[in-house]
Amino acid sequence: MSGSPAVVIRLVASAYTVAEKAGEIVRKVLHRGDLGIVEKEGANDLQTLADRLAQRSICTSLSRRFPKITIIGEEELPAEEVSEDLIENGQAEEILQKVCPVEYCGVKEEELVVWVDPVDGTKEYTEGLLDNVTVLIGIAYAGRAIAGVVNQPFYNYQLGPGAHLGRTMWGMLGLGAFGFQLQEVPDDKRIVTTSRSHSNKLVTDCVSAMEPHEVIRVGGAGNKIIQLIEGKASAYVFASPGTKKWDTCAPEVLLHCVGGKLTDMHNNPYRYDANVKRMNSGGVLATLRNHEYYISRVPQSALQALKSD
Ligand code: AMP
Ligand code: MG
Ligand code: MG
Image (cartoon, rainbow, N blue to C red; front, side):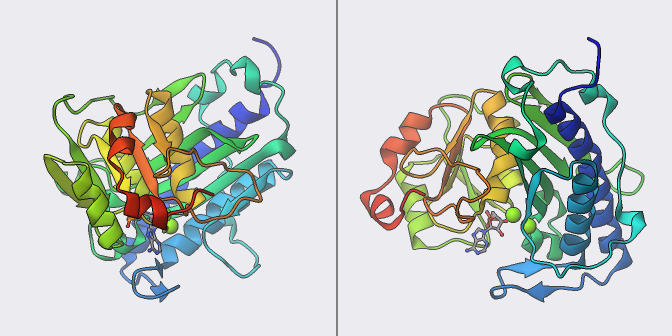
């Protein structure tokens, strides 16, 4: 193929390298010791120095290279000069080599929206549950999540000193998902994964209604989607508002690329246009297979309490 790769391919190639840099920042802040914790809306909604630095790094790096793209980050940060050592200019060569799916070849910079969660699973980060943490960069076009990068900064940390830490997964509709080995929970076993730090009665009632053989409670939306695609869980069930568009945009692309589905509890997909509500008010139901089963089990109480966007 001749000429420069399509904008969206260049954006994903940049997002890949930028997410790796953000992962490195998240590791460095932890090793330095002082996390600089700020409570946003109470003790279960935290921001650390890692969230702040990683978001500045991601958003500034991407907006310098792609000035017309709308970039929406989770953290509200005051405008200030960004230190040059936070800027990442690299692009993943492996992604630049990919042939852009025809439906996205002509997409213009100004038509793309990027949703950034600089640290997903911040609560768990502050508690040392490090494999729950991910950096999420989701890319939307025409309201749909079409590409996503998920970096897991502490992947392999249980292996102890000397282990190579971190990995990056990415996916794009029409190209596939890369950076992990797809595995599935056997069809006759229902393992439900849900929140460990943002649960409530609606959430636990809905989990029970699924008649799970096992329930796992872990942090992070990104982390729970990784569990689905790596054969650790069959469904991510969260019948509550709480997650936002930056939590679901990137992970849902990985899931969609391997045949899975992410919807609210009414079975409606989320849209990711720049002007949508940030909150995923209808909850999250994500599965690799058998979505209809889980939808059919959602209790009336949850359906009444949760509105679709
Ligand atoms: P969890 O499964 O509890 O780790 O939540 C997944 C993502 O949604 C994380 O980014 C959380 O911060 C966010 N989240 C979920 N519920 C809430 C809530 N009640 N308040 C603030 N953030 C939430
Ligand atoms: Mg998050
Ligand atoms: Mg976050």
